[in-house]
Image (cartoon, rainbow, N blue to C red; front, side, top):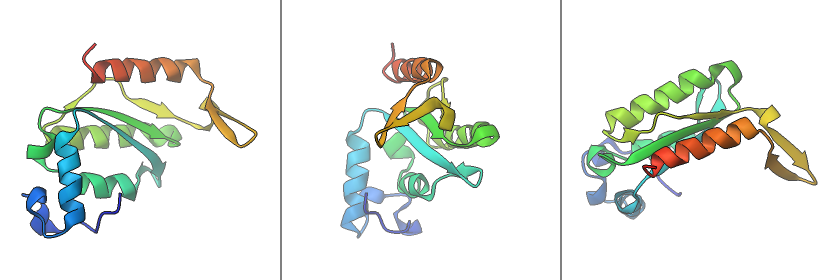
Length: 136
């Protein structure tokens, strides 16, 4: 997504923004039924990329929409990042699912420059989170 730095004037009405990129993003958020927020963990927090996306969302766009949270690479910091993203979802009045997913380097294998998820435990958590996301 090519979004500008968040403009506080767009906070209450991103769909009425003077920037067409913000309007298009708001339209896509409105039309989306559910979300999976995924972020690498940098310096004990989520990435600036997901922060920029979240800053361009608001309660009318997110209210009642299911959100699953998944993070990668935080080790002992994973829980705090998950909790923070969950709190943001709750603040936006989204329906944050109970199961979150946190992965680390050992959950993956690299073969011939191809990254594969090898942890069956993580696969099961992803499946459980996605089932909650779609209401199963």
